[in-house]
Amino acid sequence: MGSNLTNRVRELRDANDRMTQQALADAVGVSRQTIIAIESGRYSPSLEVALKISRAFALPVESVFSLGNL
Amino acid sequence: MTNLSFHEKSAIGTLIALWFIGIFYFHSVWDLWQAGMLHPASMTGLATGLTILLVIVLIGYHITIAVTARPQVDDERDRLIAWRAGNIGGVVLGVAVIGVVVQIVLGGFFGQAFADSPMLIANALIAAVFIATVVELVMTLVFYRRGV
Image 1 (cartoon, chains in turn brown, blue):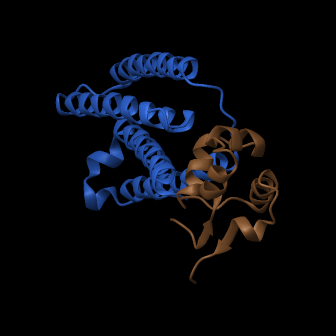
Image 2: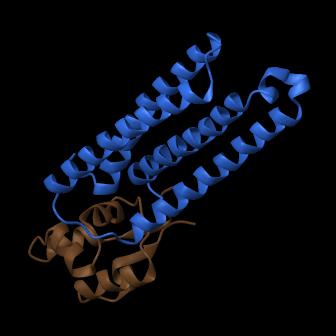
């Protein structure tokens, strides 16, 4: 459990007018609990969800998600 | 409970209700067997009554959490957790059923009473389903809390 995928979702939410988790969840089409799990590293989203999150921040996916130490 | 999804709340409530009603059922079955009164009529009455109780409790609980929770989408994480927990529950069920079959076939070694009693066999199979369901619900909660 847990993953090698790291992300900047929380940091980017705060930088985007302190976007709420619910707002991001609504934009992406997942639950708020899934956003919480992604931010805390307890869940690695699918490629589709990762791309939707990146699009919500108008950033390339590599700027939002990255592989941790393998 | 505000950060718990509907599925988590459902799993918690179902696990608690199933555990207590299930333990009561098997304790009653044990008492009946010890008293030599474990026959189809007594078992049917017991199982039917407790099943109805379980259904009423679960319906009431799920209506309550559905009404008090904000609308939620059923997303990929929910589906993945349900699939993995169900997969584990299925393996447990398979192992438990095979265990019952082994007990039946080798009844002469582990006690002929088991192989000769359809009621004991039936309850052993019910216990297999109970254990598998409990494991599935526990794994659901583990996956939601610790990650999947």
